[in-house]
Image 1: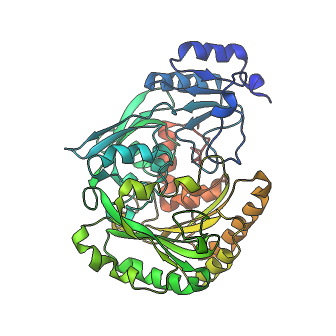
Image 2 (image 1 turned 180 degrees about the horizontal axis):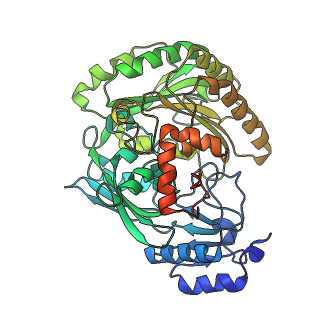
Image 3 (image 1 turned 90 degrees about the vertical axis):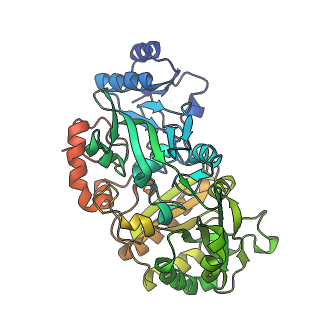
Length: 466
């Protein structure tokens, strides 16, 4: 069915006349641009894209979609690998112009619009030497990362992003507007902290901001080892992480050294096992805290150095621009077994493209000390958030990178805790969504029944209200 058949021109015209922001349809010259998302492998054709100007536009669009029974998608920064922020024949609520931030340095909070990236937040917080726990790439959207949980460089020190969410403004399926926090709509607030976009359209977030390092300067960067040393490095790393102070975090992965500065030319294209460290504590303790990681093994490169937190957060932005072909697979791992380590070396030696990679992000320290049922995010037993990413700029290579990622995941999955991180899953079906939430799933279903009984918000990692 074509977009115009799904949503007749007359109906779209009705919506266009009631929105303050522009409504872009297939006949508009910028339609192909606005329907693009971060993952270049996604090519969907929505009926119309509502570039909302304010909350009133969001309410109008939600009411319109419900009344006309049009599929509704919601786009923050459009970063999710599965491309849920656009959908064929849907109405897209697009926040791309809603990117304001407001830091209260006294209260140490930051209010953030739903169209912001974490780069926007880092810029605002950084002026005050503050940071809010987020992810690992500054072009990631605030809304998507937050609603799925939010693991990042500061997870061990300050918890997940959802552990630092203070409130959220939400337009519900019936068009009403509420603020969800610990006192107001606490059941909704619980569900938003990891349950994804299932419960409403979040228009803004308020987070805690924290002092990090020295006036916002952390000590971080990569240490790279030859892939032949991967088994030794992984075994050392898995024993080391639980012994470290919370303010030292490091994710481990297999990757290929990029061909360009700041990496030395003799390493370009070399397959490696790498750990990217972030120490966010007091610099007068840095030598003592960092000694174990500086003294280990025979690294090919050690790039750990002082830098502003936003510099570390944006270090990979240039390697991963919008429009690359992506295929992601994800799991949570409560341990890194010897069997898993063998697969990491095997698949690290056979990376299908220069950008394809595997990362394990710690969910320990402060994040581990939050109760399993305190938020919708269920994996609080320590361990790692693992992602396998097949990445390449050429659409002709999508099949190759997808096959590598799937094979890697199928071999590795038996060593996992059973479920994956929803922010790094493709569209993989209901059982995978249930596994992502463990014992919290039934409670999420109840909240879904209360706030979205007809499943208007279903273009996501869907929690079915029935």
